[in-house]
Image (cartoon, rainbow, N blue to C red; front, top):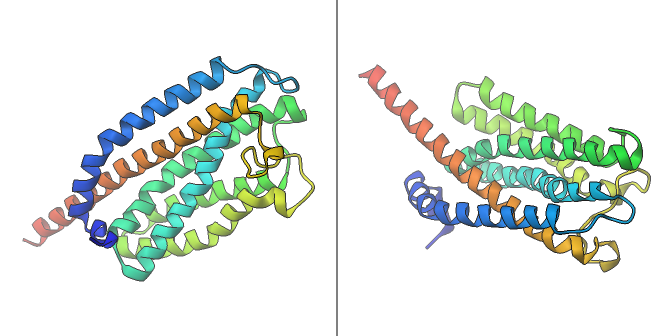
Length: 242
């Protein structure tokens, strides 16, 4: 069986309908366990106090904001190369979800940064590139809405996604590219010296898994909605012709 079978809208709808109940259940369980564990059963940090617990929202949201754009890049490339409509619709469906994660990351970052840095915002390399990524999300969504022909919209938004991928990379690795800046390095790293303490690390991993599945859930649901909308538009167009 080829993976490209799932590019068929009918096959995608059948498979996603079977997968969604399981994914939704796992999402709810992981988010409940991770957030309750993190916010209510971990100690205050000796330096940051209770504000450190914002990590359970900020880090997963920031990771998914970037990874959502990576997913959009992959599906956009599939559209450009193979012209599979489900991939284009999946990219379109992921954009508002990615934008929401980006806004959550920016807001929680400001709430975390103010008591730590003494300011809500700083033109730090990672923060600035993340803000630009947010603007790319807005532009991507606006471009889809502005163009009536869906194939043309998919082509142009795919190109925009390629350009915006530069800032997705900068958002992820800005701290490594530039030594200056207020933003800390990675909270999760293969280097144990850079990781947060285990007491925070374990619930954080659970929260990240929950956010990943939340993203998958929302994208599957929105892609199914986009497919139904495309089918409805095709039916209405046929009725007008008839």
